[in-house]
Image 1 (tube, rainbow, N blue to C red):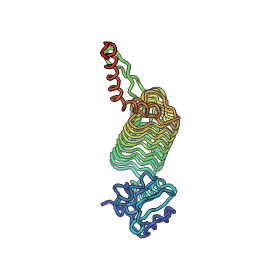
Image 2 (spheres, helix red, strand yellow; image 1 turned 90 degrees about the vertical axis):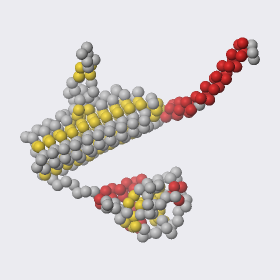
Image 3 (cartoon, rainbow, N blue to C red; image 1 turned 180 degrees about the vertical axis):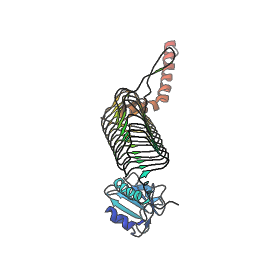
Image 4 (tube, rainbow, N blue to C red; image 1 turned 30 degrees about the horizontal axis):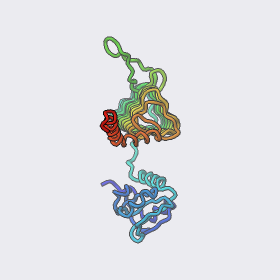
Length: 355
């Protein structure tokens, strides 16, 4: 069984978070979970009044609650509420502490005997290279870098200090990745973009001569693919977080602090401004611009540039005010159809003189 991530009393948690405790201080808390799944030794959270009614039916032993939220059905003789300024931020602090408690130790520094390190590569003393990893000649590896088992680093790749590559990551030629990044299993960076010209004997491949430049503190989820540029580099800005199974097309320029959720497909030469958030399963066509701070709802299809004035969503995506009217109208289509058919019949009778 995995070790419990918290192992603290409600009183100890209140002290750690500076929380106001409403309930017993000696309740033992061993884990965290959602309000509907938590058990008697779990901590959950209530960020707003929308979720407060669920507390009465929850089995959780304790909850973090944003100050000012009223929680109906609370019995302070049995369970505890910990009031904090922001329940989400408090939970984040606890999760970070819990991760440090149960996280496996980092791999030891050094090069595994089965790894292949080609000529011209210097591995810093504090770096770690896992089993069966391959590092091509002339690559530059920063201090504290972790290269997991079965990773493939092409010749000339640059990896900044303290970046972690989990198992089976592939960084192809022309890739530069910054400091303190985390790259999860199965990521491939630097493959050719999908570019072809029609020809009499079939599609003719267009050479891609650019690379991929990834900034500092970027996170790439499992199975994500980032293509190299055709002429200039594909660029991912500092602190951008990209979820699992995302395709970034050739020549894209993605700004700082962007969030791209899972299963998105971003076409070539797309520009995404700083701080934009793109929900899951979004399809983005080539050569458009998503403004800084823009919000795109999950499941949308973008066929034109997006502003930050209001959220966009839909298929195809439009500003929320437009999409909501279109959806509301579509729900009324059966009624509108019946009305039109009734009117057609009445007009027909009038024209035939049967009215």
